[in-house]
Image (cartoon, rainbow, N blue to C red; front, side, top):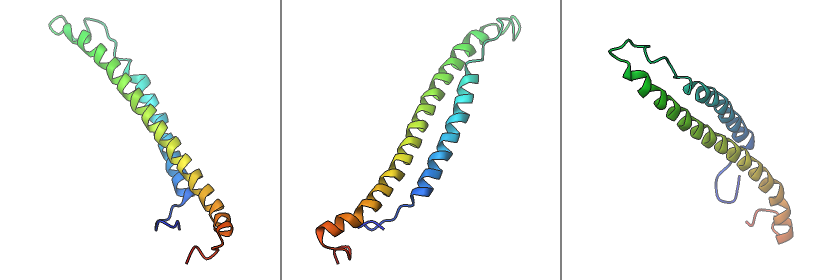
Length: 108
């Protein structure tokens, strides 16, 4: 446990980072399909011929939004894994810091 009164389990943080990375793969697949909304102008008949022209740009915009979300989740995954590494580094360094400061009992 850190001196601040909380505990972190780096393995659990890494597992969460891996889970987020799995979501990145799924989001990327959705983003790739979101742009596939192109259809012929007569797909809904002549009465609704305006619909394909409206749907295609929206599909492209949805793809862009999902791509941005994918990048955000990927950055979060990297951040969580980096935090796990930082916690491990701090836990490794902490006993040496206390030794140098002359307080192996944690400053008590």
